[in-house]
Image (tube, rainbow, N blue to C red; front, top):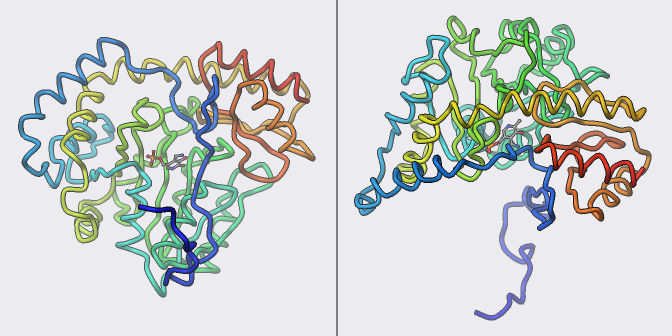
Length: 361
Ligand code: PMP
């Protein structure tokens, strides 16, 4: 095949996709990567052996399609979530991005709207747009929190089919109070999605929206194995909601969307949750130390309940980002202007980041 002589704009592509850029955090080959909020601790040799064994166990059956409904995996995820959540209330897909896409396919679409409070996770508006749903951009408070009153006012004004609440929020790290989520549930005319990708990293005393599931059939709580579970490469996200919501998603999912390899690896990871989640407390401590250090350096830092920290403010943030990158540390130029986001890594990685930042200021 020769190089293409046309560009994508020469193709009969959908008008609303014309001129758009693909989503992309740079994937650069640098010594210290603190840009996509992964867990920096790789699986132990013992877990690698268990994962290899799990794949070997199913490899002889790979001529067959996988369990279309991922029943065993959903049972394991329900057990992990606790809060009385059952397998019928859980659905799993290739990353929580695919979960969000399926939610938009089932509850959004042309003529419908989804509302989120920005700054927040940029894939929410992107997936919304690709599904033909109209995105409505509401705003968080000055400190990146979300007062119940402000949230309710936005929902009452726009009456969206889907509301996104991200807690802890990306890229700010801010967790929401249950009061705000309950207030939105009371007034939202459609589905309310609480994106809890970073739930396991919350500080003490910040409850999960899982506790609101019973009695709120239009609430969906999304989670992922990409962050605390240290399985970003596996691509497993999931949700907890009323069983009727799962039934709705069955209408839009592709048959056999979750491969047998993915299901086996995810189940093995859950069986080894003690090891995988063992690093969560270390990462929380490292995060709190990072926030304190950044503040000590005179920088402005958002409170964080996640495994990353948003800090600033830099009139030319690109210069600071580039200076840090030139020293072998990749962080993320994302969020409001003047702010940068750094993921929490190992102690060595954080030491490299602190040195690189100091030299770049
Ligand atoms: N939600 C939020 C808030 C995120 O930050 C991310 C990943 N950056 C995701 C969802 C998607 O993660 P995944 O598809 O790996 O589960």
